[in-house]
Image 1 (cartoon, helix red, strand yellow):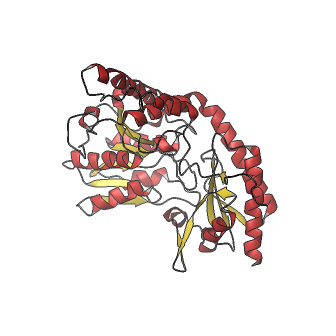
Image 2 (cartoon, one colour):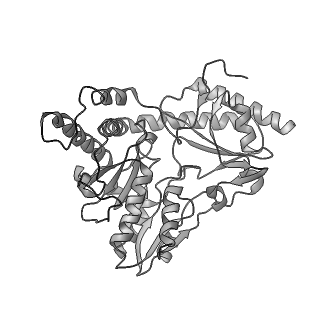
Image 3 (cartoon, rainbow, N blue to C red):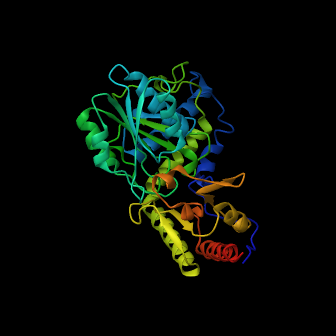
Length: 384
């Protein structure tokens, strides 16, 4: 069944989210008329400075930390770089060993690879078939030379939520800094840094209905990082440069909305996700769920279709549904994502993997249309 509306049903919220109307309204004032530099001491800097301070409080409230512990950045990738490279540089006199996992986002894995090329040792821990890290593996991996553990809060492809709280106990007992990439989790599960026990945490604006090009790093008071950039000292000198006031205001409002509506939004996203899953399973055979069935983000659904190539499937449904692939085809060869490979998903399943992720505004009729489009496409591709 072809989509009769103008645009395909959007089921790729883990890739990016639209701006919330309240976020747009909050940002508008700082597009015009409040254009001033927040570092200026004259009249035109007053409103922008107050707006940045308010946004810092809004982000801190979501994370349950002090506003002083929030550093605004340009994106989650930058936050991850500041956290990992910053700790590595500041603590290299104590050791050169970093522990992470095989399923991290490239914004963590590539940073670790860079450090590895520059004299650091990196242990990349495996995960089980459901994408979970074994806490015992973390405990066995750390040594007297370990200065940082970086484990994502939840995986962006399959949604599995990691045992960060238990890993934090190990890190704390050994005096090791703990960083978590939480780009996917605000507004879906709690990001209370006190409960998680982390020292550094990354979030991304465009994953929670704020603009692209803004992020934040939680930096526990007392934790020192070497900055990547050097300049006039904005953001405690950790991320110098004139603040992007418009985007920061948007991030602040988005965090306020996420804190206020998280439980309601999570229930809705889970309901839509489960309706989508049930509908597809009922309509087609040989479907495999990737990720933990319970310890998973409420909006994330990674499915593998045996005998189907993900790229072809996305092409077939492209006018009806927007989603992401877990495998890509280049020059006739299928490249399977590092996450599915680490989970040990068999190739015949992995190459037919797509990720569907619901959002706040996903409606029941959207899901039903997506079920029909996906199931029809799978059956057509299998028959051909």
